[in-house]
Image (cartoon, rainbow, N blue to C red; front, side, top):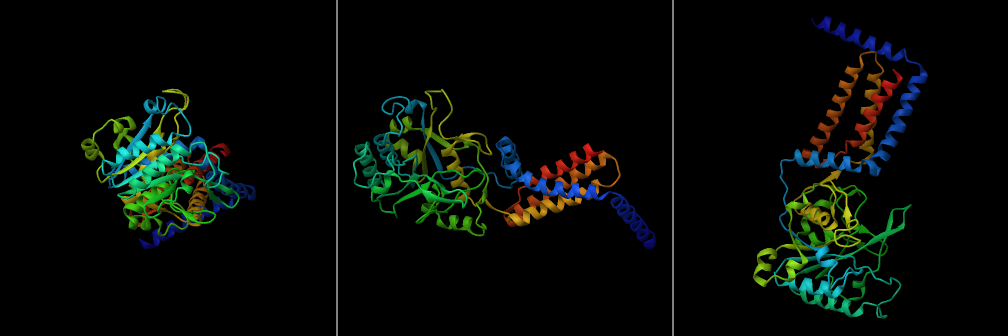
Length: 403
């Protein structure tokens, strides 16, 4: 029996080798070219905006539906400046947003005794070349905001936003854009700042960013640092200098209030809503008027297009709930992609029916997804199977056209 099995295996391998050997050198050169071009093109295709929504949906379905956890917001509450506030007095659609209004809003929130108040509002200097001490066009209202922040930070942490920009895109280096808060002289132990600039891939949770002169927290990591620094350290550990992935919560699951609701509420109601919570204040208005034009600070994400405040809240919840996952090292990921594609290319070079080739391609795809799931669940490492999937489909299409 054993000899018969051995004979069958030898015969099968001989047939496979003969069929592979029968192909011309031109065939194998094309296969090698497909592997090289496909690997590079697959990564570029994955970065293309036309595929980003599909990629986000696949990611959220994979991590969301297969996870044993059912994530929900535990700390974060959102206060949104909507069309009703932004286009009506006293804001009246002005940009930059009136800082005296923000001062009144955070003072009112302070009576609700939150743990953290985080202001997801661009505080970049209107005239970035101005030096501290030089007169500016909004000094009076800026000082009202600064005074409110100083008073509130005596009892709780306040997080202010800033932006970063490329100083040299070729070296992927950044600089911190001057902000009005630079001249305020806040106590850095009580008033934190974090950059609100989002990563190109929204799935990645932004952490500490090295800039010219100093390292700067992301808006989410500045919030988490004031609540549970251990969670932040855990997320930053073993990231291989790459941002970790995080799962997302649907925006409707977050508790949210309008700024008008807050300003019109009494202290008892505010304590019921915000006590010991993290409050993120953000914009949720349209650019051309109430319900007209595109939304301000609106971004595509794994849970659909949402306002930036919801994205930062998702990052905070992911960090606090240990729902961040280390990306697989790029050389390892590329090696897996090329290996799977090479195996498929060899098998597709054999002579058997197309439906069996499609079935095989589906099996290899399922194997990649299973590999990603096992590494994610057991190692905390996420393998993005989107690009290998594109490569496998490309190989099958190539074989179909060639046939």
